[in-house]
Image (tube, rainbow, N blue to C red; front, top):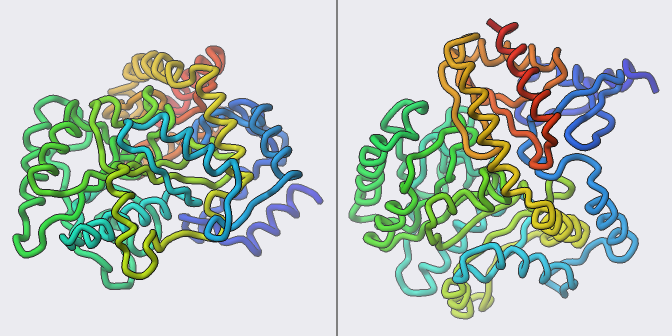
Length: 426
């Protein structure tokens, strides 16, 4: 089948996620990936710095072998009926990376499901201990998934939906422009906003605060140092749980295994997904304090958690996750992300003031360039693709999120192509 026919088939039958109907995504139709590079149907090669899933690059031999071996042995089983040995191994592997208190992990298929599970666990826990609560505090610019519950948390306009909100939410606006949020002076106004939100409704005491350590879809916003530490104290003062959404930041992306490690904070629940299996299979984890888990024998209907999907903890996904965790540790990818990210950020900061770039920020290999407006950002992404570099865009912010396995030569190529794209977009 010709490339033209494949594109016509795609345009005729496929409904693309999160995309305008007028957008023609078939311009980049990929057929192969190796390392940090992908190839399209026309044979053009691109350095991929657009996928937050892609922590270990494409066609990593250890991961692909693990998937193949597991598919021929036992592809999956419903964990509400029985179990398989890899599910426990993944839960143990995640627990070893978490603070000691967070020793229990629920496996789901996606970050959205995991965020929804975290909220249900929190609310059911509150009922279990005789202190029922439902109100959640989040960032207005936060993103926690695409189901009705998870998108009800956010104030981002494109997450609006036609249903009534299934839970009370208090949203916190950024007190300063995104480019100013990482400075020490942003800490007190940010904490003041959360302090007000926690005390917002005396008749509805807060159940939990759910935030990302770095706002992804909300614009690659880096928060001030010690924010999570101080937020932990505020949660304790109000009897609220602290839930951290590490879907985009977990497993090395920010130069630490998890984003919350930059503040050395102890959360009550941690949600992680994308980097857990490096994008090779759908899997997510909800890690909770053992003290929360232990209350679920009081559930009046089941004496356990009433949540899950038939494919939760799918054996092939678990095999991919175990191989990914081994690769991250063996190749010291967390440390590599910290080193490469620091170097890349230092170089990209030189673009501020050129090509309509107004700010550069990031943590580890999560590098964001803010442009004067959305058109300028769109032009930069288009120009980058013409120079063989795939980037992602959220509004007026362009993000470079390459694999943690990025080689030094690839990092040099990324920087050079990015510079050329910014110059061309100007």
